[in-house]
Length: 453
Image (cartoon, rainbow, N blue to C red; front, top):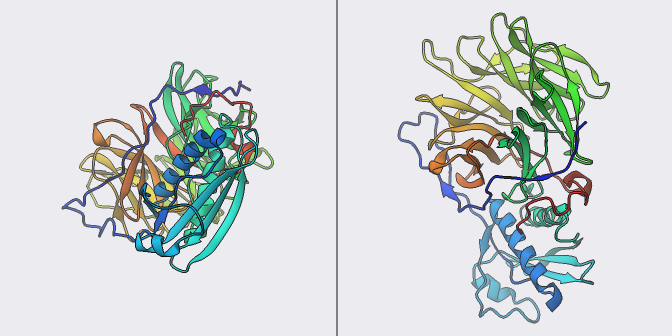
């Protein structure tokens, strides 16, 4: 077990302006992106007593950023000459082009404030929904996650879609002692180092419940799979078979851990029973070839993985219980191919991976049956994709823009933003929703995280 103190991260984090990939001229797999309509939403200044004015401004900044990053709503600015007092003037907001009006107020005592949000349908001139959110202290790790959760509620009220604000991304980055596991909020703030192994860590993977992260570490010399418990913040050995154990992933129901392990000089995919903490079962069989990086389908009945059993690295899909591997990436005889790091979308319809294009890795998606191949990136090196819980956004490592880091891409519109600026940030994994205070570390880590609302 190790100490769970969350250390201040050395990397530089900043919210970046969205950018857009241009469509390469040599694409043979169809249109990359299509314009999409985003209904306009406007959120005026949050009303609050003078002693809570600074808090209200911070709350407004976080929620507006979250709504913008959802890529489902067009955040509109509010002119200083717009009257905000009195009953809602639906006609005025309609003339300004807003579809939704979000009103916020902070009420209650300074030591226990409550955020009240009211979403109004401007077109139909009615109150769509209203809810109050109890706000933790601003330096509590749960403070920003409470606001993220509030923003996700607004997205669901307005679009009936899953929000991604109340999530985090785990990834690997360099620290003083080696490569460690870090986490960051989906908006690029609240960066924290989780592991303290002073060694080499790889391949973090969130549990479905969001309270644990499995990862591979060399901290005891032998490369094995460990599990980090977010609260209280401790790490314990999970899987240690003879040889190297790596690329862990949880099944959607949390009962199994998929991973790769060395056997007879090569790697094969295994499953491990998490409920019984035993029973590693071999799932793939390929003589003289390597299979690794499993990713389960949403129903847990199949998994994707990459393997060089055809002489080049390709993506395959196989039944979890029984069945042969099916190739889903394009095989071209005598052509250099490198397809790796598959991640099955939570909506089940796409598998993301990176593949080489003229020797440079780019992000692709493909249907589980191998149809509908789409190239999503073309600038710089782009690797290690991971889906958000909405099945619409992907986080990946990239060197675009002249510097390395993690980026988030909306696969519908092509809108892209930087998440983390880091020369060695890689292998990101996007969590599910983290609404619970327990899942964000509680109050024990207050003051030790970088928090910039």
